[in-house]
Every structure is written in C-alpha cells, then in structure tokens.
Image: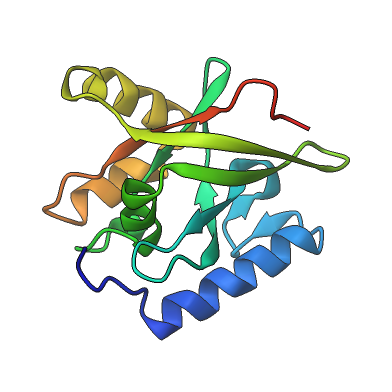
Length: 152
C-alpha cells in the first residue's frame, strides 16, 4: 500500500468537522446540514490505527452510499485507501436526538451500477456534480452496508 496521508490542513479541518458534529452544531463544516454527515471510523491502511472521518452520506435503501470526492481534489481522500485495505468500519449517524452507531462493510460499487448510483448521489446532493467537474479522476462510489444486527 502506498504511503497515503491526508495533508495537515485537511486533518485539522476534519477534526473541526467531527467536533462540530459531536458538539451538536446544526451546520457542519460551514456548509452541510448535520443529518447529511456520517462519521466513519476506519482502520489505517499503513498504521492500523483508528481514524474518524466526516463523510457525506447518501441514503440507498436500507444502507448508504459514500463518495470519495475529497471535495473535487485530484487525489482520493485518505479514508478511501483505508477502507480498501480494511472494509469494516464503525459509523455514527445523528438521528435527530442521539447518535446511532453501528459496524458496516464498505465496498466499491460495480462499474455497471455506477451511473444509476451517481444519479442517486446528485439527486440527494447536487453539489457533488460540481466536485465531479473539478477533477479528472473518477470519484469512487462506495456502498456502506450495516452489518446485520449491529445498528444501535
């Protein structure tokens, strides 16, 4: 696995967003409503350490989607490399009153589902179409599927 690290400014921003979410702020990172953000704790691809990342969630049936957009940057976010190496994650969602926590498996979408899933993403958050036009890379779409019986 390559030596992928989030830049220090991104790490600081992510810590601020995680704090905003846990502190009960209604708008996270200055632009996303609290219910749109999930916290995903991944296992580091290189280090094996736990890292918590704010990720915009998209509802997809009984599960969720995540897009490794990195806000349109020309590189994948560090959490994407982590979930490829260690696909079991912990997720925290704000349900309106409390955090719901559960384990989930994260898997990349299949090429044949990508177009339909992208339509779901853009329907739920049109900003992501802008992210797609800001980079030449394909923005990975991932399934975030709660492990049966783990939601609490």
